[in-house]
Length: 148
Image 1 (tube, one colour):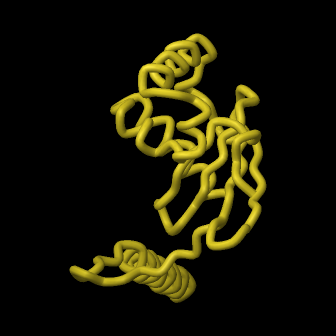
Image 2 (cartoon, helix red, strand yellow):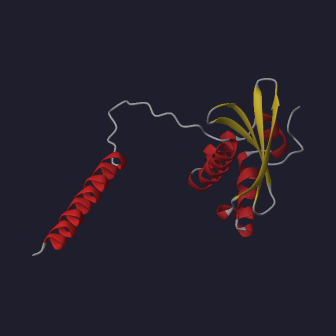
């Protein structure tokens, strides 16, 4: 081999080793192992919360209608009626592709000690989530019965 070929070979080997080391360092940073009880902070946006509330309520109506009825706000329960009335309403909604809805739009209103999420689904139905704390909410199935 002449000198020119040796220099090119050495440069290529150095380049390949550098690339290998760089990829190894990058992959080690990507595979972070968290310790037990380690707190990882994440900023949650209102649109994430709105989606979580809608999904949680829909899944609760699918998995346990009694629990879903218990999530209804007491003011709304007086308007709606009994658990049987709620169950009949859900049976009617099954024909509207109720269980496959997605978040279409939302807006938030803060009043007294509560935050109200007015959520419209992909079928045009409105849900109002009266938030008392994180994942501590009651539900109205329309805008008309929400207290001011």
